[in-house]
Length: 114
Image (cartoon, rainbow, N blue to C red):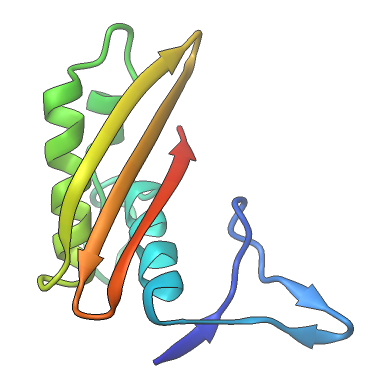
């Protein structure tokens, strides 16, 4: 399956007047990032998609709870995927999440900031 490739801001990537495409694990990671960036109930077509962002973006966040939310987001995208690693650090007001996802098509490590 293929889809439009997006950058870390969610904008479609255009190079040489052509839309870049994402496929396989790259596309799945994009979808996982999108779910993690969506506040649960925000998207009217699927009010169950996303995570409760208010519980994540707080002072002294509960890292075990955030790991569970990352695992839930991965399952929302594809139930055959498994989170094999999830490191969470805070730097000031920035929450950094590094996670590894493995599935039938291989594994990939990605990071995102919230």
